[in-house]
Amino acid sequence: MKKIKAAIIIIVSIIVLSVLFYFFPPKKLIGQLPFLNRFYNNTTLEIIVQKGKAKVSINEKDQGETPVTVEDLPEGKYLVELERIAPENSFYKKHSFNIDLAKNTTARIDLEIGPEELLHGTILYYTPMRSPSGKGFLTITGSSPDAKIYVDKEFMNRASITNLELKEGEHKVKIENDGHQTIEIPILVREKYQLNLKVHQFPIPTTEDIVDASEV
Image (cartoon, rainbow, N blue to C red):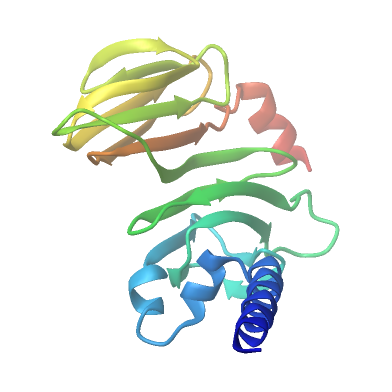
């Protein structure tokens, strides 16, 4: 009789735990536990919009207006939406970005939102990756195939670079592109992480563009 009761208890426990883990995955469950959540949800997302302000939503939840800093986030994938605050019937569109957040890291969106699809600035976040001691990796994606990428003043490639091994610490990245505004940014490479840097560049207005704008 005792064996039957013990077997029933074990079966019921397995069913309850299975249902619990289905609706509340272990990562999500740990993040809700008091005291433990401050160690688990230790990721930060910073969002800045230059020369203006934008409404921010993260995973379809309103976060107010830029600048926005959201702390104590659990690791995972996030959908960030930015909508520049401007008069009605303006030429600004809503922009969406998918970002992976890793534990114990800070991700940063630093952009200027132009008319139509135009953006200028950088999106930066880390993902875990095995690396040699004292080394990390850098991946850069440019918005133009003609962009020239320099790391610590050394030309690396056009348009993009993938898994570039660098010493842990601060480095400088420069992206040049004929007819576009140059971007220079300091970066921090971390051991056991890949730093993902996405770059957007404004085109430099031509004389014709300036004349057309003045006539509007």
